[in-house]
Image (cartoon, rainbow, N blue to C red):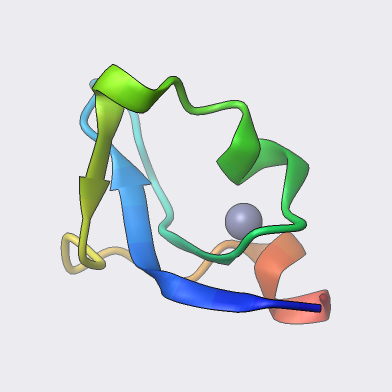
Length: 50
Ligand SMILES: [Zn+2]
C-alpha cells in the first residue's frame, strides 16, 4: 500500500477524502476534479482498509 497526501473530489456530493493510491474510488476521480487536502471530510472506508 502507498499512502499519498490526502485528496478529495471537488464535485458536489463528495462525502470522503482519500489518502491511498490503491483506492479505486480515489483513482476514479478525474485529475481536473481532484483537490488536495481532506476538505474536512471523513476518510474513505476503502482507504481505511488498505
Ligand atoms: Zn479512498
